[in-house]
Length: 528
Image (cartoon, one colour):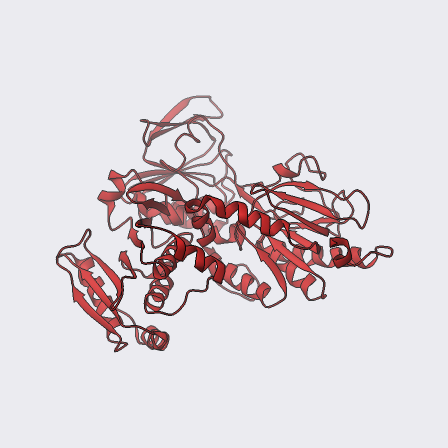
């Protein structure tokens, strides 16, 4: 099951086990069970601290449970956790075996104080780049608190459950049999839903922080680059965002980041975060900005307010809020979001195996999505508003070579239809003739570009008619001391490498602004 190189690496990791663990396997007669048992046996052979036991009766098969032999801590995989989830498997082995999770002491104490039973189930797909964060967070919580139990379930392996629970997007989290949350979440976000007082306590802690010399709002590539450049100048630097990596976390293949021939979004995001953490940067995640209050005079303190109630202050600000997927804005889209309308083919594609799907958009993202889905779905229909596709020619050649894909040009989507529970059809109009059409299907993947996350800035800095932050060649906005970079700005071409370059420019411009302020009082004095 595991090749020699992976076995050697895993054997080295397993030397960190502090307690014996038992792999309890529940199997049936399927080929997947044989594959899972081979994986379990390979792992057990790498350490004397690991034993294997067959469990004839269990909630699911094939599945296996990682249990501390002399304790109650355990997590389960109703999946063969390879691909994106292999790291989740390795961490689960180590953490159930007593190796401490990389969680701040205060957060770990919060987890230990949670009262159970808390039985979590996470439906995921092995091609989902968002799912490992949720799986790893809940596994770590289960390792710290025996009252917490977690099972990671491969939706493609347990399609009957997916259908019965009407799951059409991943990750999807259940708690004690009831829907709990969906989408990417970290430990702090999960705790805030379980312990409603934790969010307000966190907001108070953030509000008590001393002002920064530069505060970066947004933790994607632009924000990360700005943080590195300013931290290297020795000034008090903070970065705050919803999640480190931003939209890069939702990107599968990256092949145009110079000097890195090929990587994946989560890997690049992890590298960005590691680089930032190598400097003295104050990092805060899980916070969504709600307002910017500019300083009354140059050199004064700008204020960022967050939906949590937190307030942070800084002498200069770099705005890097990024962008999100553009919606179709047609009747039925919002009603059937996550019920057949999806935006991440890599995450949710496996849930539509053998079904009929549509892709909206003929750019690179749309054509790549159609190509990926063609290997899973029975039929793929790509609809493009214009009369030509905008994707690279190599992608178009691949698209048109696929027998289960059809392309419809000049198609204006008019409505998403459903039965109240899930999507059943997509209506569109032929633009030249106005003739209405309808496609019977089960899934719709929207890939029509990006919208800047700037609604909260409408009353503070100048925005373009497309909602982008207007910046000059030095990344300065219309307000002195406030700079911006990345996909949310008027800088052309929304590319990762351009965002990092613009982030570096914004960082240098902010520093240049600070050193030219006339007789500015030290930050420490301003905080008093």
